[in-house]
Structures are given as structure tokens and as C-alpha cells.
Amino acid sequence: MKAYLILAATVLSTNLFAQLESFERSELVSFDDYKYLAQEVKTYRNGRLVDLSTFNQYAAEPKTVILDTRSDSMYNAKHIKGAIHLNLSDFNQANLRLLIPDPSTRILIYCNNNFMQNIQLSIQDMSFASKVSAPVQVEQIFELDKKNNRSRGGYRAEPIEEEVRTTPESRQYTLALNIPTFINLYGYGYTNIYELGELVNTSDPNLLFEGTAVPEGENEMKRLNGQNASKAKQPLIPSVLVNFEDYSELMAEVETYREAHLVSLDRFNEMKKENTIILDFRSKAQYDAKHVKGAINLDFTEFTQDRLNTLIPDKNTRILIYCNNNFVTDFNSLNEDPYLQSKAMNYPKKTLSGLERVTLALNIPAYINLYGYGFKNVYELGELVLVTDKRVEFEGTAVPK
Image 1 (cartoon, one colour):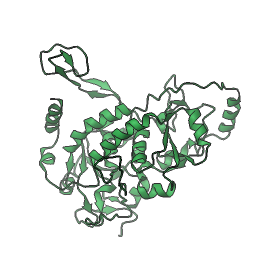
Image 2 (cartoon, rainbow, N blue to C red):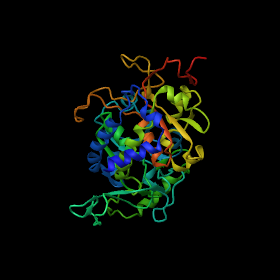
Image 3 (cartoon, one colour):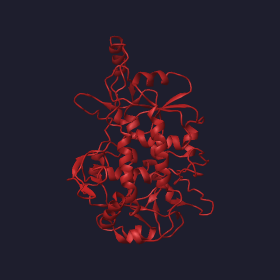
Image 4 (spheres, rainbow, N blue to C red):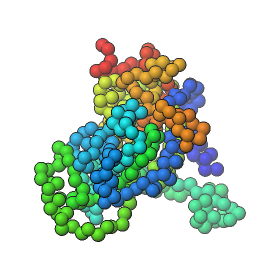
């Protein structure tokens, strides 16, 4: 019953043309791929969350790297000392192999949602803007089991109707970059991943940073303070700002909704009018080189409520999105444009039964994040398009004049 209710709500809330439109979907953008991969990662990741002490211990050992997947600007401003960098928006098989040639290398990851200036007061470090949505209105629907006189969630309920709608309530979503980073690394074959699982005070003497925003002498002062710090090992207290359950619930809600918001290239072009923007959320380097004409840019790794609200003040604004996996130079061999490199795994992954290849299109996590931050008037280019197609225009430094 719940699935039918969600579908009915989707039909009423979206453009019928988009739903009824028939076109060939891009085989390089698959929500099923991402969903199955996320389910597999969810269980696997549970045993790979470590405290700061273990994180530092691993970092000092051979064949280990700390990988920062935030944007170039965030990495340059402040990152954990010794971390190497690859923007998540730039993840593809080739770039990862260049940076980390051996997939068995132990990789340590972290993101903004691991750090605060004052945990008790929930004060953010300006260099680690938290990826938590503002409260959004959510209407919960509970299905009743008349036979057992209980709701689906196990709470006792009067068996009068088949479903009960609660009044809308506010909730926040945590949209930590650690989660899509873990999913992508795993999908590309890097499974020796450990994630900083704690919420850590940025003044912790065991946590050293470097970058343009790090005051000179800060690390030396931390080292001196660390000499007097307690050596007793503390239990790992998971970061409340990194929540895979949140992400899974949001992904399940987005799946059906997004399906009704996939459009053909012709429809995509028709929708480019007043109160509509084309949003390119790839890295600035990719955007500068080549993007759909008229698109504006906000790197996916810099998605926060404040940045999105500043860029798109009106949440009713229609947003059109696309990613590298919408464009190829040859349909038959799926040859890539060098400036629109496909985010597909180029070898079979046996643990994902029935799948010969995993597609890791940036459209999927971007749609999930936009929806979670309250931007729901989002339409996604659903076709696989030749870059030479005259219906699409590009601009950028790599586009011949």
C-alpha cells in the first residue's frame, strides 16, 4: 500500500509529460547499480569505522594513504596533515588508478562532518562546513496490520484504517561526504577502506592540520598540549553527523520520485526558460573545460545548505541536471569525451550478482543530496547523448570556438 501511495503522490506532484515521455535511458546512469552497491557497502562499512587513535596509528603504517575527497578549495584551506587529494567529483577508474595504483592500499577517509570546534556547543569550524540539511517537512505514513493490531513499525494502533498519516514533522538529513566516498571507492575496487568514525574537536592535540587556513605554529602548540593530555583510550563515539541510515532512507524516498523526473534531451531543452537553471555539480576544473551552455557550477563536494540557498534562493526554482555519464563520443563502443570522462567501473564486480559493470554516475548522489536539502523541483537528463548531437551546445576552454 505504501508503494502505491508514494507513486500516487509522485504522479500528482510532477509533470505528467516527463512521466509519459518515452526515450532510451542512459545505460551509464543506473539507480539500481547505486542502490545495490550502497546496500552492500552499508554492512561492510560497519566494521571499518575507527576512532582517531586508530586512524593515526594506521596512517603511520606502510602502504596506507589518507584520502581527502573534498573540493580543491576546501582541501587547500585545511586538511589532515599528510592527506592526499582527489575531489569526489573527479572520481573515475583512470584517476583513481593514477593516484592509488594498488587497489589493496589501505585508504583512510574523513569529511567535514567529522569535525567541530566545540562538540558540546556544536560550534562548526569554518573550514569544515557541516553537511546537514535545514529542518524539512516530512509526512510519515504508517501501514496498519489489522490482524495483529500493530503498525508496521511495531507500535500499537487502532485498526480503523489501512494507513494513518501523521501530521508533517520536521527532520534533518545528514549528507556527509564520507558515505558517497565510501560507496564510490568500494565500487571502483578499493575495498581496504577505513573511515574516521568519530566527531572530533578540531583543537584535539592528536589531530594535526595543514593548509592556507591553518595558523602558523598551531601544530607545534598542539604537540606541546598533547604531552600533557591523557593517554587513556576512549571508546569510539560515532559522529552523529555521519549517518548511513539517514542516507538509505533518503535514497529509498528519492528512487521513485527521481524516476518521474527523468527527461529526454528534447524535453531538457524545452524546459530551459524562466525560473529554471542548469546546474553542473562536477569539479570546477571539469566545468571550466566543458559544460552545457548556460549551466552554472557548484561542485557536489561543496553542497551545503548555505551554499545551495545562496546559489538558488527560491526552492521552487526548476533545476536541470546532467553528468559525464550522459555523454559519449560513440554509442556503439561508448567512447568517452576526454572532458566528460565516464564514471563507470571498467571491470566486472563479482560480488554484485547479475551486474557486469557498476555505473557510478554523479547524477545519483547529486539528486539525493539536492532532494535532501529541500530542492525537489529537479529534472535530470535521462538520455545517453552523442557529444556531436546538434541539439546540445557546450562551452568552456576546451570547446573549439
